[in-house]
Length: 281
Ligand SMILES: [Zn+2]
Ligand SMILES: [Zn+2]
Image (tube, rainbow, N blue to C red; front, side, top):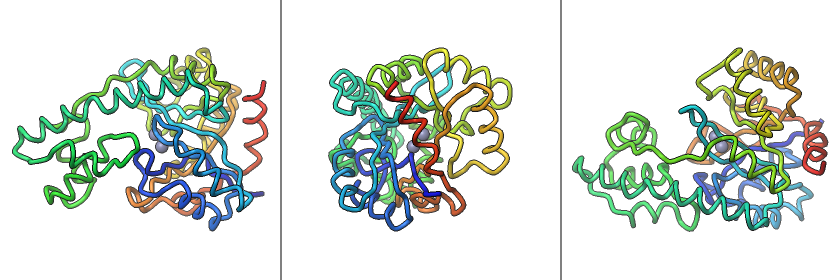
C-alpha cells in the first residue's frame, strides 16, 4: 500500500520550504500523492504540480482555512476543489486580509512593551505569501528578543499573552460552504486540537456534517494510536470520509517529516478514491 500526505505547508503560508522542495521530500519519502494545504492561499499549487509531474506524483488541490464556531477556533481542510474558481479565490483573499489585519495591532502592542519591531521586519519574513503570527515570531528571533519562535509565542503572541490580538474568523459552517461551492471536499482538521472530545466532539461533527462537512482528519502526526482509533470510529459513526497528513511546516517544526510525521505516520493511498468520488459527485 502506497503512502500519501494530505496536509503540508509551504512558504506560501507559514512553512519554511518552497512547494518544489516539499515535493522532493515527498518523493524521497515514497509519497505517491500529496496536497499542499497552505493557510488561506492556493498559489503554491501550480508550483507543486510543476515539480511533481516529472516525478509521477499526484498533486491534489488543497487548502486549510481557519474558522470559528461557538467561540472555538476550528481548521477546515479542503480537497479536490477547483483551485482556479474565482469566487473561492475571492474568499481566500478576504481571509488573508483578516489575517493581515491583526498584524499591525500586534506590532503596536509589542512596541508598547518596548520591543522595537516594524511591519517591514515582519513582511521581510513573509515574502510574497500570506502574513501571520509565525512571521512576527521569526522577526522577534532575528531581532534577538527571543531565542526561538516557540518563546515568541509563549511570551508574547499566544492567546492570553500581552501582544495577542484576536483574529476575526468566519463561521465554520460558511467556510465548509465555500469549499463545497468550489466543488471540493471539506474536512475537519486535527480533531485532537478541538476543545471538546468524546460525545461533544461527536455532536460538533454531526452539526458540521449538516452544514456540508464530508470528512475527518483521522491520521495526523500528533494523534496517538488511541486517538486515531477513536477518530476512525467517529468517522464511521457519522459516515464521514477519512483523511490524513503530517502538517509538515519544515524548519518551523523540524520534528515532523513529510509523509512520515513524527516517524510512524502512514496515510494509505486507499483513502483517495472515496475522496475523489465525493468531489465529483
Ligand atoms: Zn491546522
Ligand atoms: Zn496545517
